[in-house]
Image 1 (cartoon, rainbow over the protein chains, first blue to last red):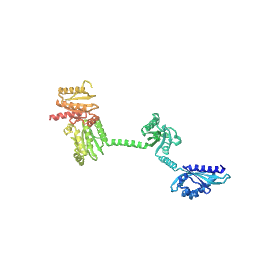
Image 2 (cartoon, rainbow over the protein chains, first blue to last red):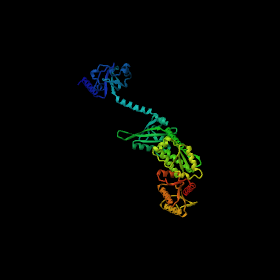
Image 3 (spheres, one colour):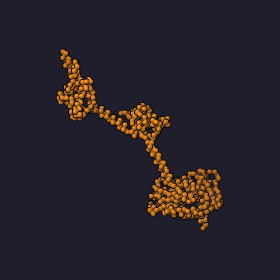
Image 4 (cartoon, each protein chain N blue to C red):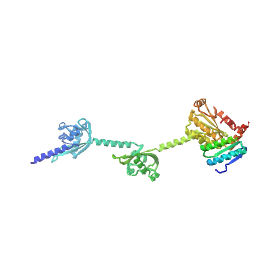
Length: 398
Length: 123
């Protein structure tokens, strides 16, 4: 076998090697970028058979923008000057669809120096790029959440990711917290009781841990946090870490407490008891009577009866928008409780429509005295507490 | 409650004070003492002071109602005195029927009430 045969045999082996590469496109270009070799891998990637490509400029795979920008010429020049050129970018298949290509261009030189052509290796990275874009989008999405803290913890509770929302909430920068245990944000008493560890254990066991509590910022100030910890699982279902979402609810908590305080005050204000005469109390009932208010009203009234030893109580209902069965029940219970203590009640402020409603609803008021105006009711009351008239209230039917 | 059931005479009336925990035996003692005392003194009225009872349940309420009925059979009128606010609310919420029982804020008012009731009967 002569030297020529060996060369030919080498050429064949080389050819077979190239042909066996199906994941990459490995082709040869001449100085101008004309395609001089083709193989199944290239055909698989671009959709073009050899006869449609050989002898044509490699420009045919470029996007219109790249062609107009003279991309190919730049690439060949850079490759020639630097000995290698690598890039990533969109390339076009025969059917017009695009793929994200990782391209490398290497000049081929004669033994004595001048460049005679190029080897071009192309790989389709569309899938990897999609994943990267998706990952980036998730990262940007998390970073865009600035009202919440969304961070990742490892299995031991060490901080593994930080976000602008977390920084805004807790004032720490990423390098101040990454790798440190999440308990650094907890209040001292919670650190002592191992609150963070308990929460992680709950999250792992129950699949979620939702809590509210005090957390501490970098400057030592506290805020009321609503925290949700969810375990991250790998494909086998093993917990590999946790996602922690936290929110500052200090304002809402204060708001709620304020509302509660105001509600208490309103309850207090809405059930005033007035001593209009010695041993005569007036209770103006204003607004809608729900069971909570009614209970407070009864309680307040009876306490005052005990304190003032009041013999008569006038329940003025002119401020009650509508009397229904419930309201009537509440009032009758109050009247009965007052009676058991030895006090007579008089209903006043009964408007014509209220009188009709009470009868239409079939509400039985028993022997309860009832008057249209507070003035009339007061007259009855004064008569009842008048000297020597104590017994009369009895005969008038309590 | 001690063996002694505190019963005071106030004019023509008796003042019975209920206090502490009431159980079956003390209730029996009270009923014995009150009925025999009403019969012995021919009292026209009995004031039952319950201000010393912090808890009144349906059992105690029944005891009171029974006492009122016995006193009535002996020809005397009774009045419950000094029911605490919490007790009044409890009785109403329990729905204990107390409709026929007379009440007064305190012993003074109770006596005035009894005097009125007697006068009423006299007329």
